[in-house]
Amino acid sequence: MAERFHSILERVREFFRWFYRYRSIRLTAEGTRFILLTLAVGVAALNTGNNLLYLLLAMMLSLIVMSGILSEQCLRHLTIRRRMPAHIFAGRQATAAMSIANRKARLPTFSLRVMDVVKRRAVDLGIHLLHLPPHASVTRAYSMLFPRRGLHRIEGIKLLTRFPFGLFIKAATLPLESDLVVYPEPRPLPEGLMQELVALGQDQAALRRGHGAGLYNLREYLPGDDSRAIHWKTSARQSYLVVRETEAEDQRQVTLALPTAGPENGPDAFEQAVVLVASLAAYFQEQAFAVRLLVGDEEVPHGAGETHLYRILRALALCHPTAAKKPAPVPEGFLTLGNRTRVGELTIVVLPWPDPHLMAACKGVSRVVQAWDVRWARP
Image (cartoon, rainbow, N blue to C red; front, side, top):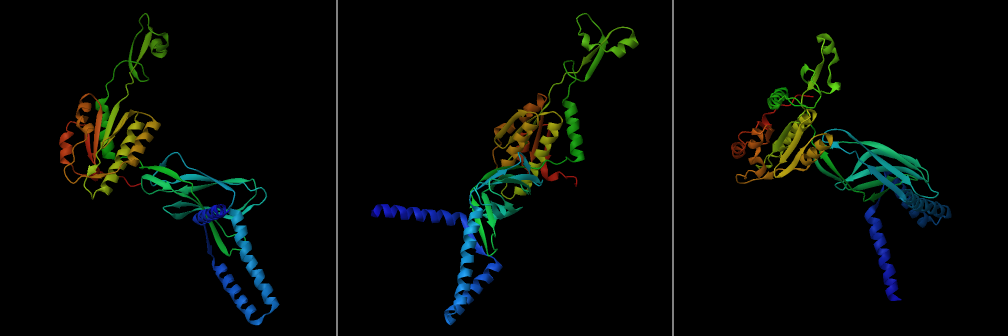
């Protein structure tokens, strides 16, 4: 019997530990005045023995108890779902959505505020529900803004209500975690750098006959040629059949390289270099290049298209500079960049800080861009 009693007592203790971990309550200004007034009425009732004052005191105490019970009912049996955008960029507004469903059978929820919990602090989302009927749900959109790239964690959701009398603010914290990868924001490249990249791309291009969309040559029709390739307008002018030959569409390739080992006091310079690499990746993706990324020892292989660009941006979002007290060894992937340039691939190294050892090892690359010398155009 004693063991059963201790087991029940332990369960009760666990319940209260859980309750007070995820619940909090604090007085409002009106609630503070009401508590002081209740104490004054209680003192007056004890001193005078007036039954009317005792009745008034009982009514005021019952209002406090009812406030606690009804506010708790507002916060119970709620299902919250957070919907985050697929891609979030630093410095850009992103739109998320919060879905709140009331699973109570009969009781509605009143005066509910929904907030995110980030680093144990509540962040106001501007979501305030005055009335949510039972078995009903609502979805509210809200804006998010992250000033810096990287991995950001939303630890939970905080629900607050002042119902029913506004004497207390009852809060419930739900451990609903979300990990967000915030990409660096690609920017339009400076005009001078863009002209250099255009020249590098033209030097790499080699026109030859093959399957594609661009015009390579017009020649006389030969037996066995595809009739769909006949250029009818030119054939009508020349009075004989002329065939249209197309230019081969060989996908051009580029490697973007960003070292991560450097001085301890260079995080701001590294952030500028990350933004520059992200901008270069977006530029070459628009130019239909197959883009490869080297970030320190990490590699994202060649690929094209929007999905591959997001892979590159994710790698850039999660990379971090590492402090090198002595001259850091050149990563193995950087030692072969000159060879890739000789076989016709563009190789661009972005330096966050001066590194003579790396510059000496990367001789022969298409271009070395010093991030601290880049002057961005004003938006």
